[in-house]
Length: 357
Image (cartoon, rainbow, N blue to C red; front, side):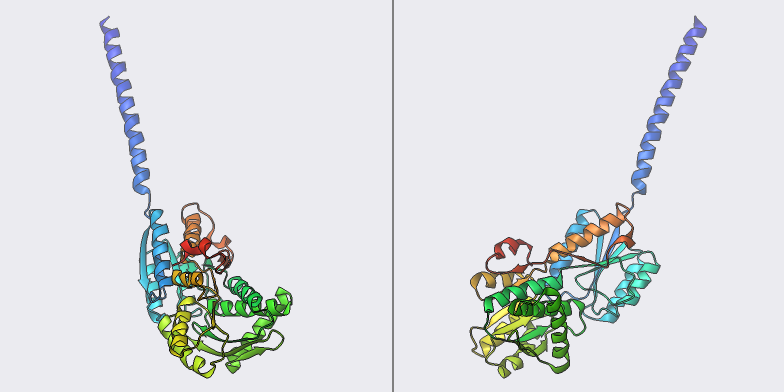
């Protein structure tokens, strides 16, 4: 009896020890998994924060990335390519898991992107494309070409057979997004006013743009469409005002001021007011500032293409999550990933208002 009793006691102690060990092992395993879970770090090298669009883009990236539990670091180049390269070097040295980049100048950004790739860090471009040879994941931005084209088509319909005499405000020479936007505008106007195919309109728009860049002005006789001058406004309202003043003074009979973003056109509106010129249509290839949407509602601004920083940031973070969390191959993406294009006018502005900046 005593031996059986001792055996039962021994067996009970043994089972208790096994149970405790099993529980400890389970807790330990769970604890190890938790401790091994890495906090993801992403950097955002932004070209500038001197306009509402870029401020909103930064805020949106922070919002969507931090919602995933990621640590976000933002470094501002203040429009300086050397500072941008320094910021990229900093992110590489910090061992970021991924870098978002809105580059100052397309070609200047390529070496920094390729250094990041050599370090095993993917780079997703937001808002602006980069030059040839960049080993980036993809470029996420609004469909600049189709935004411009849709706005151009809408404006051509409004003008009908009437002549368009315009000036255009452009952001920066060589900027990919700017070139796409204004060429899109030209294509839409030419297509809408002449009835040629979209493919043919693009060809004619590219020729029109080349003429504009080489001569400072361009005319499409069949479309009754002239750009009498081009000003470079650095994407800002202040520079847009400066760039448009002399052009407006030299062309008091303008029907239209075209632009590659809203901010520069706000400057042009001030210049028109200062010159006491009324009745000029304000037409932006793309942007989507709420201030522009308000003016569209009032009938003081014809149209703008939707370039929502919120939608660009959301799509960029979605791609980053697919790579960093879901394990998708970063080299499986197309060179360019686009948001849905739209021409925002008085007829549909309420639909897009919440996505403005």
